[in-house]
Length: 107
Image 1 (cartoon, rainbow, N blue to C red):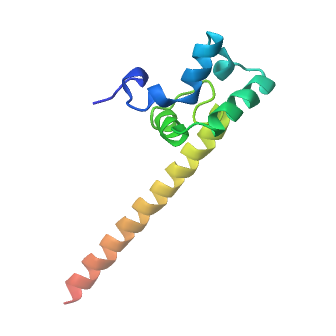
Image 2: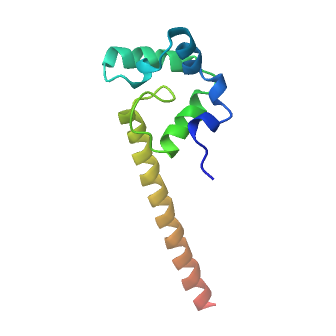
């Protein structure tokens, strides 16, 4: 079951939520202006749920905005690295299975 962002239990504790209540907007987190992105990233750095937010954005392939203190390009690098690591782990598992199978045949 996929929970939407407002259904996530950690959202009410997010620093961006507090910022939006003060300013009336989340715009800073969805700006293409690099300076505004940096401001948003500073807000995220002090957030107690930053890692949960980042995991959500990576897991749900959020392609726009600052989430968990990272821009989309930064999150994309993490997704790519995780993909490569998972592929490598899967390949090693397959190789191990083949080796075990071959060893069992010789017994």
